[in-house]
Amino acid sequence: MIAAIGLGALVGVLLGLLGGGGSILAVPALVYGAGLTLAAAVPTSLLVVGVSSATALLPRLRAGLVRWRLAAVIGGTGAAATFAGAAVNRLLDPRVVLGGFAALMVVAGLRMLRETDDSGGDCALPGGGINWRGCLPKSVAAGLSVGFLTGLFGVGGGFLIIPALVLLLGLTMPTAVATSLAIIVINSAAGFAAHLGDVALDYGITVAFTAAAIIGSLAAGRLATRLPTHRLQRAFAWLVFAVAAFVATQALVNPAPA
Image (tube, rainbow, N blue to C red; front, side):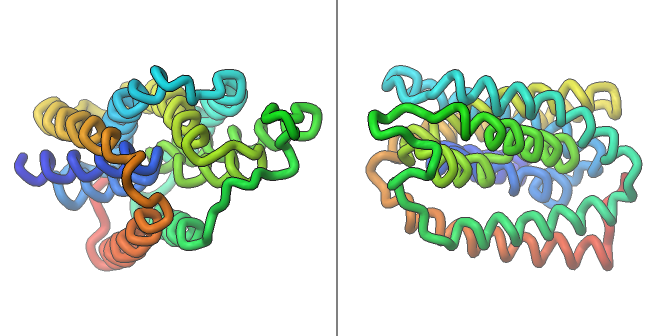
């Protein structure tokens, strides 16, 4: 239980600071830290990430940072794709799922090591709007990809959404973080619904993990505007690499029970 509280707080802090990233640690934390099976860890992760992301979103709502139409497009298409990801998850051996999860973590870490600027991609209009004619297909593709991964691995996908929002759609980093949190809430709710009924949740661990994540996200949200985002991303990337190596090793020598 102590491990669940500490790891839940870490996930919440990362979500509050970066608008994503914490979710990719939630499943390994629940499996290897809290002792859940993989089948139980995936829906628990989605519940924790969804609730803590909604909490981290609250201060951004007051600031008016969320692009709601964009969140609706990406989140709506992603919500549909989560059910496909959940269906594939049920067909795969836990060892394969954890191996794929480790590979996804490496991709996420490499993405975060790259410098991200706020100059905007080819979707941004000079007045600050979005060129929907060119960006709608990209938004739908991003939503489907992230939604599928949400259902398959139990991740919110913020580490993929934020680069897409900044580089493809031209949002500034603060707006991208806020919009990403809204999308994560939508995807996590859909993913949780897709896995609902697969396995009984451990309510003690779920409540402790979620409460710690909420507290962590609230505390981190107050600090997010005062800390250098690029430095945080680099530190988190190296943490992700370390956890990916651990998960890959465990998948080979000590796979989690289904």
